[in-house]
Length: 169
Image (cartoon, rainbow, N blue to C red):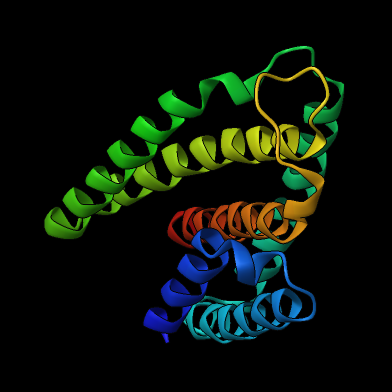
């Protein structure tokens, strides 16, 4: 199932003719959403229901607050895309280290740093979608790509918050 998610992400990200052609773009985004929903269900089953509800609430609150901040802020987060790319790869490397060492404290640090990084990604992607006076923007024809970016940011934020809440219980 994880392979299908990656294939759908690559197709929606790299194939402009799929991303911009109605109804094909909606079909692919819908298929991605269904597969991602099954994967989220498979992950959340290992956590207590209360932890999942707390993570959902925290994700909704953080996503709303960061989206409002992105719309109101005079700071241009889109200019930091290169730095965020490097930070993202550093986070992936740290995640591999956590998988090797397997200590709860490292997992908590990883989830905390990941939450911070993906919060910045959410602000950056929201500003990319809004356009305006920001350094970079996404064209209005790329609404599927923008939706995919926001979707991935929010889902990853949810999983990291769930991991934090789950480990802290």
